Length: 356
Ligand SMILES: *Cc1c(COP(=O)(O)O)cnc(C)c1O
Image 1 (cartoon, rainbow, N blue to C red):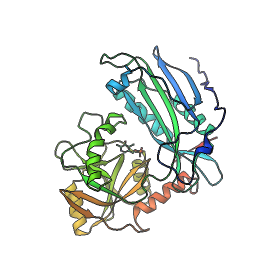
Image 2: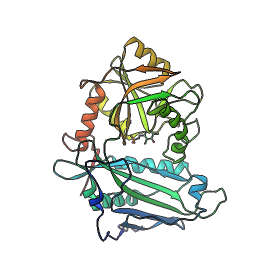
Image 3: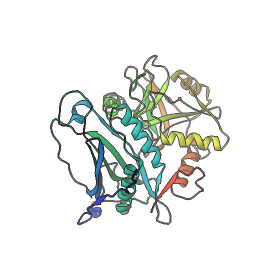
Image 4: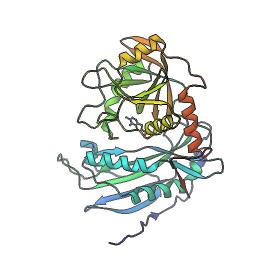
């Protein structure tokens, strides 16, 4: 067996576009850094990894990803610590999850080398695009899609794996209001709710729009069978602190295994907090709001990190949660995660990868 070192063909942009970026007014995901990474899958193998200036790509109108949805993605963030070193948070977990998504969608798995080498080289090359402001970061978007120009319904023979990056500010500037959807569901048993396949997000937009028209930020999704148990919200896993116990729905095929979720649970257990991964019904949450036993509710995810939930709406009643104080678990864990990611405290679980 030969172990070739991956050689990436790097073509640098003649001129950086970074002066177009207003670091004080970053929007989410609208301006892209100078370069992109691209690898093609054909004849049963990944070939020709390249980093080239970010630009439009040319596709066939018959591109199978457009018609039948073989399209998966990941999301993570790159940070700079106080010494100016570039850090990534648990990128191997994104690599593993990408392959779980690929497997379910009958897409080819990618090697760790192709994923990680492309990622590290790209982030290193565009590191000037990493904002240093608190809460801001360089969002990294790896994705893979089918590129056969063939409209028969079958798994494509050819694919592209790409990564681009975009500087982002904090996702939610304020606490979020979520609404229990009375009718729509996000994921079903035996379906694809546990992977990051693009269709999961397209299908959520209409219900989210209805919720936004009612003054909410996001849907609180419940299970597909009884419409009773809490699952997720937007692109966040959900957590509650009731009577000092951290409660979150258990993983399964309807819930995305968030890396932030896992990190928060790990830290809570490190700190000796009681953690329960179990079904929790919307009724239980509302009863805990009414009795005053709920201390906090929040969402976890790369985009938002920790998003405090201030209101939960159900059947046209809007329930208000307690105001967040600095003593709340979500504040503490959010700070700890920031400190780990920025290299300010010990990284006991080896979560941080330095881009050297
Ligand atoms: C990405 C995502 C999450 C959060 O996962 P992280 O790895 O923490 O970013 C949660 N739910 C859904 C539906 C997602 O797509």
